[in-house]
Image (tube, rainbow, N blue to C red):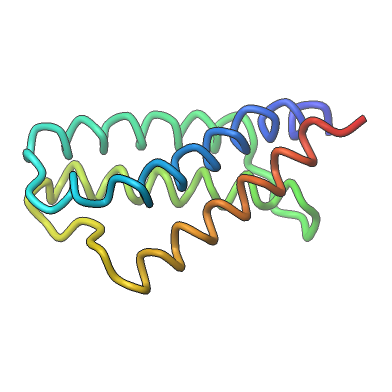
Length: 116
């Protein structure tokens, strides 16, 4: 459990900041440079693999959120690396729902990671 709390304390605020900043700056993905998308994918893949390697927990408790985020980051990273010219997030209701879900997961992980 200490590893879960440590990762949650880092991952939670990161997801919250990511969701809020992407919601405010969706226009940057309208015409993204493929090199930037590729680099972003590389960072997501490394972060996802680091989470999976250190925290591959498949129990029906809150640490499962960390594992799922790790796998999702790795998958998104691979997509962005192999399809840097592919469709990225664009301004739509589905995108805002996804960002809201990421924000809520970030908030939950923040609370769980930083509580006593």
